[in-house]
Length: 457
Image (cartoon, rainbow, N blue to C red; front, side, top):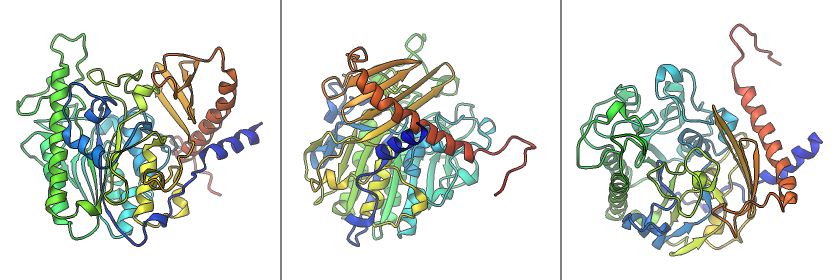
């Protein structure tokens, strides 16, 4: 039985279009990867937002391809960012929840540098690399952006900070330039935008990769242009709180974010590199309570569609036809494989990427590919798992099994578990085998308990 499960898992996870330099042809296009934080699936005009104006993000969709069935690797920030950097399921590295915001509590936890991270492989290919914005993958130097191959880092290391004081959830300064703490005045979204533009200006005559990791619209919900100090060091306010935030506050943050993206896109045009630059826009997980995922169900922290399906847009002039819409299923770690493929970056077998290169599909040179993808969210009081294969999705929420046909029911309103036991029986072994596989790898990476000797063979 175990060998059958392993075989099923291997069949489910084989990338149909592996990350080779097959699309590069010696080219080294620039890459600007924009990843926002806690943005709802329906909080962009191109995805149907009725009350949010995002002309610059919408312009990317007009000039490129909009993906309707794209997913985050995780249900929260650290897991998805680990999946992006590694190109693999983050569970393999034991990162299944946001890392603690206090460095003393986080301790040795973080994404270890393997030498195969996305920025490191691009750096090996001759790219200048930068992470501008949120990190949230560890505090120690060995877990830092620089250790993973980013030549330059400007931003913060915790999960959130005050947009004006730049203090983390414990009231400690959290603004960095490489490994040096710094002080700067200004709204974080603006600081991130300006630093990204400065890096692009500095490296416009050589291939560059910018991971533009905006923290907006993640809480604290501080409105741009109105300097404030977030109460309780940025504690997440909820609907039932007396001095809560509003949808209008959230919308103002998203629209200001869009304006920042517009400045970055204008800089690419001004510098004459827009046609040689791939621009990717996506988000790290579902939105919080002020966000909208209509018509999807669920929020951040859950494996329901509203917790993992995210907006995703890709623009590459001359390669991806403008105005395309695709329901090709994809996931964050596919961006890793896709970027490495089209930039011609050599990928050692040891990297063991689990994503696939989707550029041939996006460009219309290859047919859509059926995918099998997995998610798991572990919380102290609730555990969730899910697998999607083709249009079918099986959800295990706190021991309750649900079956959905996402083609006809993307909102997950019609549970078919009482009629389609065959689907559950087909997908459940895949999920079980995947869990066993990632957990075994994570266990092998964990240090032994204090005082226990390593068994070296």
